[in-house]
Structures are given as C-alpha cells and as structure tokens.
Image (cartoon, rainbow, N blue to C red):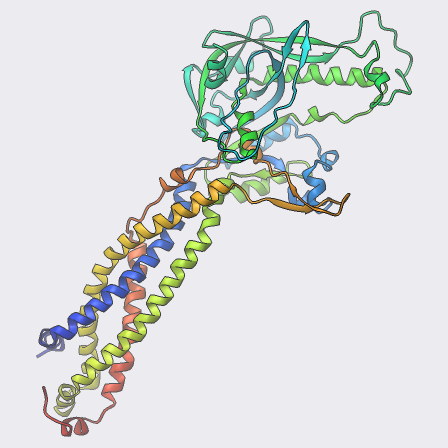
Length: 546
C-alpha cells in the first residue's frame, strides 16, 4: 500500500481528531487571511486612485528650498516673494514638450470687479464666523464689490474639465480659433460657473461686463522731472493728491458656456477660501487676460513714475502652467526634467494631497492588520504544534509497527505530512473565503471611521514661533495651488470608499497559501521528528496498538 492511500485511510480512521485540526486551521487561517487581504486592500485603494485620477501637476513654489533661507513663519507670511523670478511662456512651452506630458495648459490670470453677485459657498458646517469685509470700490454711485478670477485658456480641452471636477452644463467650450485669434471689436467668449449664472440670471448668449480700477492721470496734469518727491506711501498727502485718481475700465464678454463644479461643502476655513476662488473663476482666452494684466501693470508703473514710488509688482507672477502626465510613474522623472528649466525656487507640485486622508489612515490600519497577522501566525505555530504532537503521540504504536516492519523514516514522515497538509489545505481553502468576508466588513468599518474622523477634523494645524513675539502660533495653512486652480480636490470618505476593493486576486491567494502552508509545515516538522526519534522496540513494549 502506498503512503498516500495509507495516509487517507488513517485520516478517515481518526476523523474526529482530523476534524478538530481542520477547525483550528480554519479559524486561525481566517484571521491570517483577513489580515493579509486587509493589508493589500488598503494598498490597492491607493493604486486604484492613481489609476483613475488624472496625474495633474503644476508649477509651485519650492517650499523646501525657501525654508532653508527663511523660517516657516517668514515663509507663511510671504517674506520670500522677492526671491521669485517670473516663469516665462518659453519655459512653459519647453516643459510642455517633454515626452511625459499628455495635456498641457498655461494660464494667464487676472482679477476683475463687477456689480454682479459672486457665489459664496455654504459655510454652515464651519465652526468659525467668517468676516468677508469690505471689498471693491464705488464709482458714480454704483458699488463694485465682487471680484472674479479670469483664468486664461491656451487649449480647447481645459484641464479642469479633463479632470472631471468641472463639467459643461450648457453651451460649448472655447474653440481653437477663439483662443488664437485676438478680436477686440466684439465681446470675448467666456465660460462661467452655473452657480454664478443662476445668481445673476446669466445664460448662454448673455452679455457680461467686468471692470478694473486703474490709475488715470488727468489730461492737463503737469509732472515735474523725476515725479513728485517727498511723498511717503503711508502719507495722506499722497492719497489725497489731486493727480492720484483712478477710473473704471470695462471689458466686454459673451457667455458661450455654463459649467458645473463638483466640490463638496467646505469642512474647514481654508477649504472654504479655496472654494470661494474656484466657484468664482471664469475661463476666457489667454490673449484677453494678458491684455487685462498688461493694462494693470502699465497703470501701476505710471503711478510709480508719477509719485516717485518703488513698490513690488505682484502682478508679474500671473503666468502659471498645469499638465496632465501620461503615466503617474513618470512623475519624478518629469519633475527632475522640469526643475532644470524652471527658475530657482520653483518646482513641480503634484496631486498627492488627494491621497492624504488615505495615507494618514494607512499606518493605523496596517498596524492592526500586522498585529492580527503576527498573533494568528504565532498562535497557529503554538496551538498546531501542541495538537499535532498529541495527535502523533496517540499514534506512536502504529508508527512503531511501521518502523519495526522496516519502513523508512522518510516515508513515514512523508505520510504524516500528506495527512496534515491534506486536512490543512481544505481548512485554508475555506479560511480564505471567510477571511475575505472578515477583511471586507472589519476593514471597511475601520477605514470609514478613520477617514471620516480625519475629514471632519480638517488638516492638522501647523505651528511656528513668531520671531517678533517669541510665541508659538498657528500658521495659515492654505490649500495647494492645484486646489485653488480647481485642478484637484480633497476626496470625501464616500468617494474614497468607491475605490475599496477586497476581491481576491492571484497575488493575495498565493501569499495566503504560502504563509499558511509554511506555518503548518513548521508546526508539523518538530512533532514528527520528536515521535520518530523514539525507539520502535520501546514503543511496541509500551502496549498494544489501538
């Protein structure tokens, strides 16, 4: 009789003990399987996120390089601005030509005023009062209190729409001809958010006028050589000077498209500030926003010349760029290549903030899964070793007969391993399905709780020492440039859980069977060696078989 058949007969003969062994393997294996699947599920969520969310990148200030020169406090309050060189269009075009880029857009931004109402996101969930303050100006009895951001467009496939955060609801997108052909004789085409359109009864075809408030020197003004001197920028004499006048400049637009924005209710003040910008952003060709900015820069330069002032011009940093990469795995290579082109203290920012809630929740979940895996593996080794030892000791007379009849120890060991592994394999097979259910329910509950808690609490405060007072204070933490551009957003727990997947795959099954069978083998080898070290003559003299 071969050892396989002999092992099957022995298993049926000792069915009760084999069943107990089967149940222990099943229970302990379920915990091991659940821990392995839970670990891989969280990692798979991140992988699915990266596969389904566009790999959006943008030019950002290199905070690490800046904070080597300035403290966190000085950086937070903009003490570094004088270090920044403007990014040119030539640089943007050179980066856009890199082989990693799938979509590219450079945008010239401008702020304009209007008597229309701007949209204010719902702030009911915020725990703090928000003071909007007095913005804008009055002219001829009219109040221009709303500010709208004009975002220039260089390609018809606007990146915000490619990411799925913005979606065209009415009308059309801007055409290639409209983006390339400057036309100052007719209203410029513009895309407006649905919420702003509803507030102001705008629709496709509506006329829209936006304004800027620029320095205008009187026609009969007489300016001394070198401008007016002795005027301090803080003096009332400067601001009350008869030549220090501003006037209204209007820009005409025609609404060609209305779009929806898919953002959730802001959960904390900084996300509210970001959403207020995003919801009041219009899209129009770059040549229009460039004209707006040029007029503002020329106005500021004229004012400085007339009043002999020298102040920094924040408008010179109005050109930004964003790209979608063909493959997120190319991110580091793209960043390295782009950094060779960008000016010092600029770098490439990515969309990693989307993964922050998941990244923050992963360590705790991974720790729980690892502890469960170590516990189950250790318990399996201990319990199964003891159980198999007792099981084999009860069969020592049978083993003694085999040895007395001249059976080789190797074959006896192989028979015992076949018996153990056959029962263990059946237990592990059922355990992997039970572990999948455990991982699905437990991991999902823990992950939802952890993500919801982090979502509701908002980002942790950043603290720094105020060099003026020596007191540790909370720094303003603003959303990233990508979020302010409407290119990426923080995902809610429900949205993150859409990527939750505990389906079994070949990799998880292989790892589970490998861990389970190795554990069973380790628990089996020592008892088998112990029993086979016994002298067959002594075993037979201890009593009868059975």
